[in-house]
Length: 400
Image (cartoon, rainbow, N blue to C red):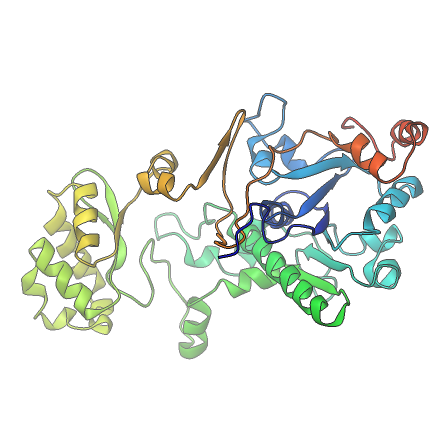
């Protein structure tokens, strides 16, 4: 097997103009796989540097640290011609540019892809991440994860009758949009390998949010019946829900009749196997409330962890409802080497693993503009020019 510690994307140069979550997540994965990512922050810095507490010893929020390891950092005020000159020098040998400004911002600065970059840098893959795209009824408007969860129906199927529609507890739209952008960039690079030309890649939170509506959208399109709030239950499968045991809650997911039979035999519910209310998934859905009550009665005296382990060994998927600390302390988390740990930094590694060209999580997240001098020197700026850029505010060394 061909193996290198440099990663599959060694030699790829990425200019990262993104802030907050989706864009920085995308570029962090690129960095973890060996790409040279130059993070360009506005003079005020990436907003996530301030989204705390908690903050690290240098004053940046843990939120920022989760998304920006392995990157070199500088700051540019791209509204200024001097800063635009720096960007153009960076783009001279760049493969990818990623930005998530409001649509029209790059054009206002004279840096739009079709306007100024496509002809000048024909091999450049340009990825823009937006809330709604540039046109259409909502085109150009700002979009945040929770707003898209609400607008696109995700909240309407999350929660139960007691709490009503509820935001999903992680920014799932931002996360997936980051991976949509990543996938689009890699596809465009593959196409460039064939024809030598870059292209523009779009990733919109709106599109991502609607794509997450599986199976609820397809259920509605087929039945015209509005999805209802089911708490942790599944609209198409039963039992596929959270249940209470003696010392906590667990999730049991049963997809097939064989799994249901194994489960019933394991927890002393053999009588349910022949009960006409539960002989098929369709029947179990109709009688889901009675089924849940029977299951919780049967496991009321059982402890979560031993029950989950024995069910899994019997071929029935089950897992304790863990807190974040318990999840990160799990032995399998350690076995899978999911945490990146070094002096002063701990983070979660990128989830993909390439066996022939394994990536390595890069250096700790950068301080604001920490690499500006080195980057500018590598671009041919003299010490006097570097001082002028800093003094003018075009390439500030400290946050405004």
